[in-house]
Length: 95
Image (cartoon, rainbow, N blue to C red; front, side, top):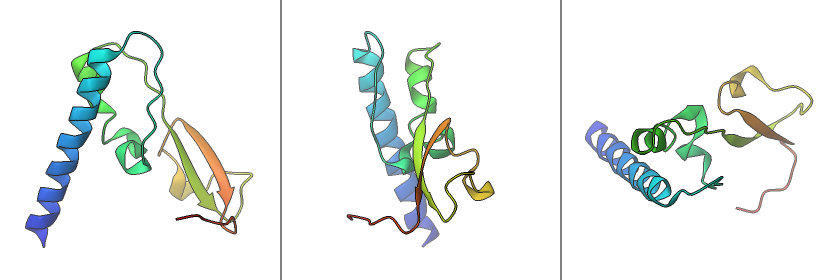
């Protein structure tokens, strides 16, 4: 239902804000945070929060995408991240 979707989005936002708060609080130098694409694709999810807690951070995102042709990024995958790991759709999955 729309209400359940709204609660899910709000719960996810709290989780992202909490992760970012702990990162910003403990940040002393370069830092790598590994998360699922839901948390950072499109520079949403966790991405806006660290600069809220610690302004001026430089943040780069990496995502992986599956597509038929791996030599050129499909338009559907554009603007998801700063860097991409492109793998063929035929690649075996382990989930």
